[in-house]
Image (cartoon, rainbow, N blue to C red; front, side):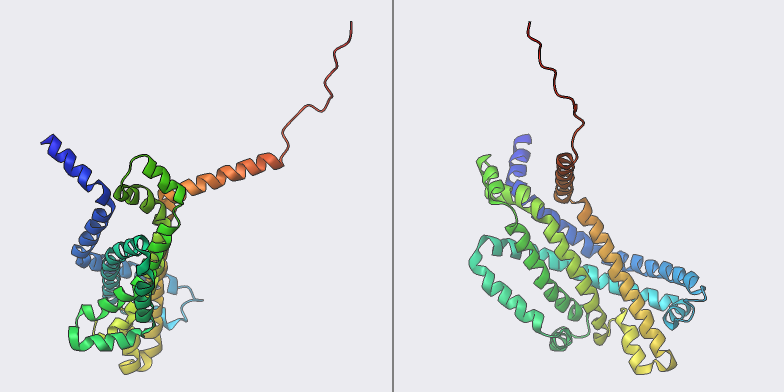
Length: 305
């Protein structure tokens, strides 16, 4: 049994990173409803915080804060759905972008056709893509998820390829000299060193996806974009407060996601090694610029007998 388990671990060793990412994507997909519930509660807490803030006379004149304070449950529900759509689309987009980026990195002849297709998709307006999908997917979440996944690929695949390309060739040669196969080099050397660039791409794609998700209200999905469209149709005197409230919470979600992913970037091992190296370089530079404490007197010459 131990020999079989050892062989199985050895066979899967090079695939550990892709398997872990696939597992994370499956877990996120299964937990999408609890994530939406948590997002709604987060929006409700943010609303109460804004309620305290709007009691300040200087900020009380902003109608968007007042509308959010008076409609906690509605705004919290929109926030939760918006967060769920963002998490679902990014989970699928990351699961697709990483293998595609690895293939493009390995087979360079795929570079031009792959990015040609992604560039063409990215140039299509998202509203037009929603309209094209309506006869196929109807008024469902997939009508919004498919464009969000497609637009995220443009950023994610490019960053995966750029991250893998940034790994020095001598590092890969050293790993190959140690007897590692191609999968081991990818999982233990290339991917960990490329993670800072990949996570930076995830951070950019997250902010872009949050913005695109606001258009999901066009296909009857009750996310934060609903405040914009309801304001133009039947907002009446509350039109401007509804638009301002939606803008505030979309910005809150985008800024919060950006800060969380920046924290993830900070703790990545490759970034910690780079920071340690930069601190060592600064210490050596400071040591070369600041003269050490030495004796100023000339050494006494030995007296002749």
